[in-house]
Length: 232
Ligand SMILES: Nc1ncnc2c1ncn2[C@@H]1O[C@H](COP(=O)(O)OP(=O)(O)OP(=O)(O)O)[C@@H](O)[C@H]1O
Image (cartoon, rainbow, N blue to C red; front, side):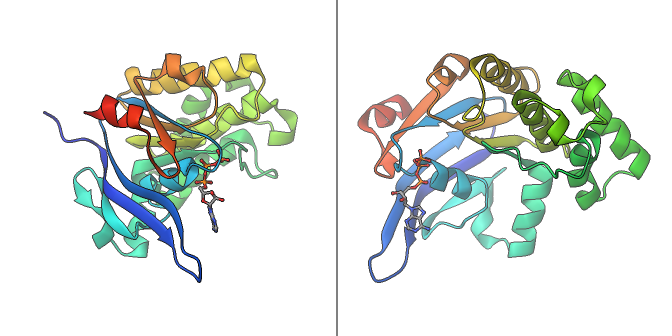
């Protein structure tokens, strides 16, 4: 069987302090290439904390996260940043696009940071990604000239800029109307099934259950019994 693209092994994250706070405990999860996994659970159950750990934005207190079989605990901060830039894509509830840049320039940014392509190729790829997401006519607009759904599609194009294996997304439909939410869920599903990218989505949006391959649930930082049963 193929190596899972992203794995967490008994990951626990405790915030130290006078009263330590356990964000997540003993989380084991394997995510395959092309798999669309949704993480659900009540507010405060640790979903975003887990996504940050899986996205190498935070380090576990114990346990480990493996990216393509590599134990990321061994990586320096610089190496982690390089792995995030080249292998992971992020989409958050609020788009975090740079307001003074056009859609095209926003999508080019991660490519400029990585520096693997010459500028004309970066521009060409950004235009292609925007066109694939139905935004060819909007590539020279700034975020303020776009609708919420269009901005979120630009954010998805930006997440795809460096051709990541994994897309991690936190409430991608949280600020969208139901029509735009349908579009975003469909795009994420297509990215997993047609492009073989692993998609991990944290959400309260129950419509994701229909789009995803697998749903797991956190309660108080740990898998719920039901999720454990599904994993068995
Ligand atoms: N820096 C912090 N200091 C103290 N407590 C924190 C910190 N970050 C998170 N927490 C707590 O850890 C728990 C998990 O938070 P997290 O944001 O991961 O939950 P969540 O499931 O994503 O919530 P929501 O659905 O409301 O976004 C919450 O009880 C939160 O208050």
